[in-house]
Image (cartoon, rainbow, N blue to C red):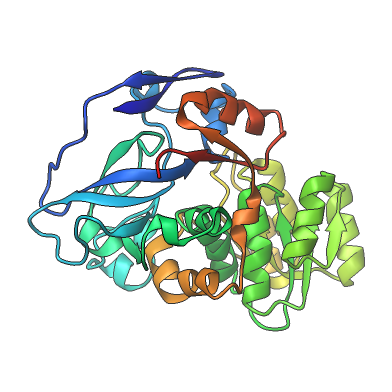
Length: 349
């Protein structure tokens, strides 16, 4: 089968690889139909954060997908071969205390609860009994636009929703979204879905600003750093109720803490790169901060899949360029050069 390999900074290749096999009773083998490139993939691709040295050359590429169940382990009763499924990038067992509380991204029963190798024709999905989300019908029942929105549910839409949930966004709130990538734009969707009345998107890119407005942003602030914080404070006469930090840099987190009102909330879902904010700043502002990976299965099953199928939300619009697996490096380059908000990859029918 074909499989994308991260060889070095700025270099993705496709190679032949052995078919994945069932290794645990709760495994499933998935034929990947659609996958994509995540903003977090670019940290290593750009050479900013090479991560685990063992990553290079191993093919740990891609963690988002929709596909068809090909095989299931002996413990699997919830899905069967032929089912069309969303494959969350986080997948817990659904039984531990964290999963039962709705935080399966921090499943305490397993340490291997993150997806990998979805930029491939087939992949092994662990903890499939609870974590996989069945989609009604089959891929051919849906338009390409709907497939894009279903794919977004494997990570970016759920991650944006997680930011809004942990920031306790509720009806009538004023919210700032820091980051105009796919996650930030899905944070705009999520804030609106949860009833925010005013949504300020921090963005300096025209294409992303326009899409943010389409998704529900009421204000655009292009300034960054202290200037951006001042602009938001002036617009809101004292700060936002909640800030969604969807970048992961020190500057983004400083902005989030700086623009939230006293007693407000920060939801941090950007993959952390840098120091944490000053404890003194958080203390004296009474700011609550929560950070972590999204609860994809929980959100998709309870809220997001229905919202997509009903046409209430359309997160698939974040995919602005399409590639096939053979052109995986082009897909990475398009995002690294900001020519695409998010690269969509067609793997199979």
